[in-house]
Amino acid sequence: MMVNNYKLNGHIFIEIPEGISCLGSDEFDPYSSDKEKPLQEVFISTFWISKYPTTVLQFYNYLRSVNKDLPRSWGRVNEKGIPLLLEKYENYPVTNISWEMASDYCKWLSNLSGKNVVLPTEAEWEKAARGGEARIWPWGDFFDASFCNSIESGRQGICSIFEYEKGASPYGVMHMAGNVWEWCSDFWHPISHNDIKFINPINYKPSGRRVVKGGSAFCSKEVIRPACRDWTNSVNQGGGDDGFRVAIRLF
Image 1 (tube, rainbow, N blue to C red):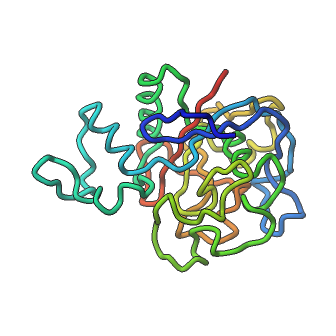
Image 2: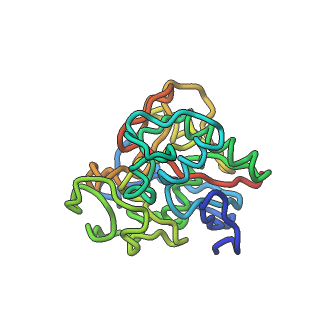
């Protein structure tokens, strides 16, 4: 259910109820890999997650609030110092975001709201994307290029968060397959999925990599599956298709 009348810097939050959730994949998923196996059940406590990835406008509000310089890649500004790209791209997912930048944004929202705003764990992210089930894509076990922004969609680039409404997850969370990669809290290890705790799993074992989920507009249908486990270097690195969404953790 959507959290009534609750927005934070334009984020709309959806409540993900506590319960058992599937994590990973098995032989019934034709695109599964060893990094995702075995398919496991975990218990996830109630949390909230933003309906959409964080946008350029939302990140601009953060930069302005904390007096940080605008990224050079944003280009020219108008006479008021507002980036011209906001005219066209304010509702596009913000990209070129490192894990550290995404984490700092969460801390800023926490200070504004008094709530525990965080990057979702891999298990939380996957539950929000799959509805707790072992479905291959957020909408089901069939692939349809009109449901997401991937290579098969033919867009050849990132799109607004308000497109591809048919691709919503069972909870109504958008763009959990394609468009931009999204950072998670977890450190990434190739076999960490095999050794997790049952309740609210998260990998705290240090690594130079962090988990990213969801694939991007430049990935194929195999990669944009919510079960797919991938990584990006976690020390001040974020590529042109690396973004994030935020969550509110209640524990």
